[in-house]
Length: 318
Image (cartoon, rainbow, N blue to C red):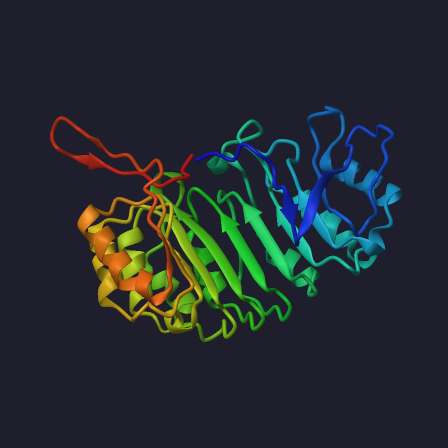
């Protein structure tokens, strides 16, 4: 899987790219779109902060509801520290901001696991009214434990997620969070998470309103499935997403043998390595209860070495 297209929307608003080269354009109403700010392509001499400064001069920022941070210069070599500094410096000019996505970068700009990130904790603390936050890229990514009373949706898209980020989420008090989407990735791209690192999330203690949980794109998806199947949080979920990873019959058996999942509205397992017998058992167990089940194998192809070693892959690695 690659990101071939930029985000089409954020916070229910269509995305609109601010013209980074300063060209005259008819701009939409400030609160009608999710504004994408990106740099280094149309104007090779402009950095992200310069484009953002022009944006702040051209648009009534007090009405901005959603911002999308696109590519900054040197995404391979440096994180968005200057971008975050610029956003925090402008926070008093963004009182209506409710959604922020950091790193809307497609493969033509950088592969997923080549995106350099940074500690995003200060960004969340600096915008306490944010309701949606997303970040793409795991290299250098950090998120410390914090309390955020407004955040309803948190998305972390990586090909390899450091375990410290997982533990940081689990140790955070997020009383309003309804949707958590975490891409764990694979070890060759920096993933070092073990199921014990998921304990804070799966206990649900600090996430009382969580209803949609995605723990996906993992090479340890069987272990993740087993942990989720026994987790207290599973009983109050409406949507469980364990897709995009190396989920096999072992993970399927754990799901069927754990806490009942018949209360779910949807179970998403697309891109998997589950055999037909277990696929049928999952459908027969859940679909009569009204659960929508996605068992599309997608592009989950496996390879076998001459010595019999089988290789299976997550959907989004490099």
